Length: 112
Length: 115
Image (tube, rainbow over all chains, first blue to last red; front, top):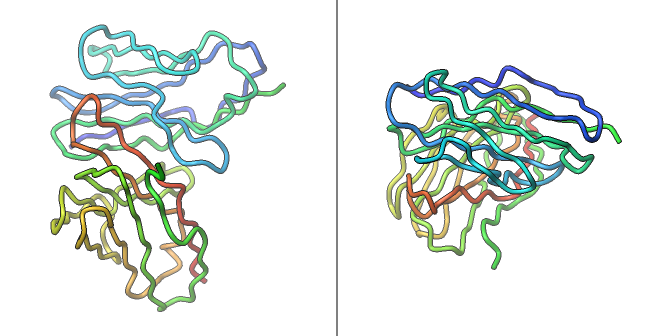
């Protein structure tokens, strides 16, 4: 069975600080990996995705993520966060199953 | 283009009452999903459908039933609501299960409180 762990439940940063959110998955086969973002009061939106090829994936709003197969990780990064990045971030994995498995989410608060 | 529409947006039920949540998508997507979102637990899949007339259980199906009589609609039913079903419910749809160009599209959610 596939599973996802997000160890950081709440991250607080000041504007312009660098961000890295951890995501580890458990599945032995080929995986598709995703990061979704949920801004306050809104629905989830796709931030970026990895299916194959270059393990460094660039998404919207300056976010990127690196797939490290040997570490079963897909960490999300942003060099300089903004107040508007305050949101909850979800990592998700799709292995052999037809549906995504989501992590428990990381709440990011960016202080102005 | 409305995307994925959920009704109602809010609902308060008493224990034992029943209700149906409606999800409608206008993107001609084959796949539809119902998730519940609880603090600290992320999104957990309740039921999903891979096409009209088909449904399947997800991670937490107990206490819920679903139907997909029309391709564009996916209904989630609670026959006898319990306080443990207090949650935010999200519907999502996708064109295919694993296509690179087929991400999940989410609705705006239904906040359900069971007292």
